[in-house]
Amino acid sequence: MNSRKSKRKKLALRFVLKRYSRIFLNTLWNDNPICRMVLGICSTLAVTNRLANAVAMGLGVTFAMAVSSVSISLIRNLVPRRVRMIVYMIVISTAVILVDRYLKAYFPEISEAMGPYVGLIITNCIIMGRAESYASVNKPMASFIDALGAGAGYTFALLVIATVRELLGFGSIFNIKVLGPDWTSWVIMIMAPGAFLVLGVFIWVIRSIQKSYDATP
Amino acid sequence: MNLFVIFFATLFTHNIALTYFLGMCPFISVSRSIKTALGMGLAVVFVMTVTAAINWPIYYKILVPLEVEFLYYVLFIITIAALVQFVEMVTERFLPVLQVTLGVFLPLITVNCAILGVSLFMVLRKYSYLESVVFAFGSGVGWTIAIIAMSGIRSKLLFADIPEALKGPGITMIIASIMALAFMGFAGMVGI
Image (cartoon, rainbow over all chains, first blue to last red; front, top):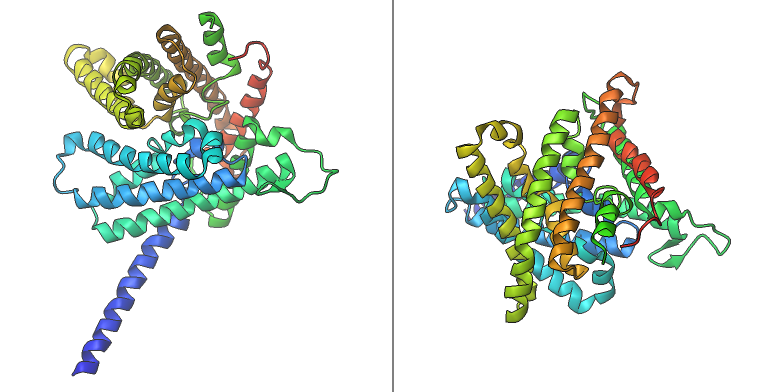
């Protein structure tokens, strides 16, 4: 009797885990925020000149998204549809204030380097997109996993782009010189054109792997 | 600082789309035709200028005296969202012609990071009131120039043979890269 109960429990647990990992992987890879949905591009371009900034931005966005997705999911049945945008915005900006204060207190030089882009996490369309399309119609736990997946997908893209740009632009990784003293830095890589170019090529590569194409140019 | 210098810098040397990467999501999704790009641009210029004009007094006359500057994210975003909602209602009621052209773009503007970005830069660079308004207006016009140029180039791409996976956002990014290179030619003309 008892063993059957525990068996059923185990099965249920396995089912739940499977479901959550599917949600996670779906937003991480199939619907990758950068490559598939093409959201949150501003911060992707702006902070990827150094890996340290990219890590901070990735974690900051993931945290803000997890907090706001869960909160929005909890209040999803209380908010009238007409004012939902403003409510979401207030929830998100509250989460971002936490990130901003934390960075200012413990990592002042990263906060300095990112400048206004920390505040711009508020208008990072990934967070709003997940809130609108997922958290507003799903349960808190699923929304939390979904937010983590989107955050991981975003951070993954940021890390790849930042690695290429910092390596070519400074000859270093995490501020440690790896290409030797003779390396001539490709200054263009750390400036605006390099950011656009690397992101364009990144989208190209990922979409070639996924074999998912846009119909129009 | 000279107002004209700020205006010129926001148009060319410090273009908000091509050097600060702000407003990229609509820059990619709304730049398929020149007409929609122009509509979006006009909406952005308007909302950007007005929000900067409202946010400056909120920051310097309310938040700074009360020493609660850290709340500025929430207040700025409320201003923007409320203004967008307000403009939407006014155009719906009194200017139905404008509603047809701007209507679809207005909800998108709340999450256009360029709008919030301008207000944040205004605080970060400690602009005076007049400088802030000129800066916001110039940034809006600069953004509009960039998106119209982009949509012009993209409408030519219909006849180009682009690799499948590069279609859409991929090629747009690479065009933006070349446009940013071209805009770097203006660098050094004025400082900000």
